Length: 231
Image (cartoon, rainbow, N blue to C red):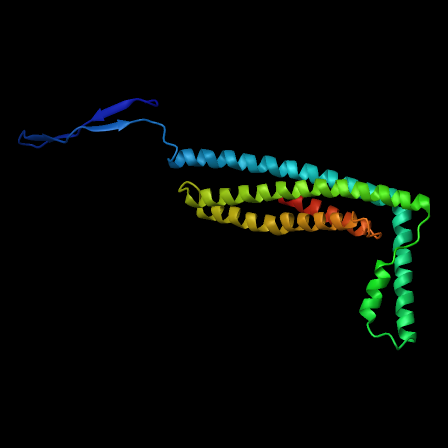
């Protein structure tokens, strides 16, 4: 039988005395039913492929962010090390002065003022810092796009988990694993990507001289490693 065919049947019984009886006619029709368990299972497989494709896309795009973050750290290493060193020296000087000057009423306010005081840079260094800020802003935009993609992947996982739970052809333990994967993905991918995007945006802020590129680079490498582990 193929889709659209109809089968009509009845059951007839006869006893040893020659008496017989039969049922009414029953009709079986072969038709498409998207709500059938097998059709839902096919849909589940298709959505699984979609999830996998988006995850591969996310990993590829995040790899580009990681590579760019590493390149920025290398290209601007001399400048960022100078700023970081000057900041550490300024903090140490502030701490030493605070110890010697007992009249200071609010050490926290003094420290904050010291942090806001810009490090003196020559024109060429300032030009490099401005260029770095532009590149960081562009990288932050890329990372924000990756955050949105990761949220799509998480939502796809949520839909998969729901369908798997409702489909009788999917073993309960498989449905549970998909749900656990959704939770793990949020902790290992979505949240860290959001944090990295936030750090990149802060680093791109014009007033913030210390871009913390080494920390950003390490975070990018860690996120990429976790994403690849999920795959």
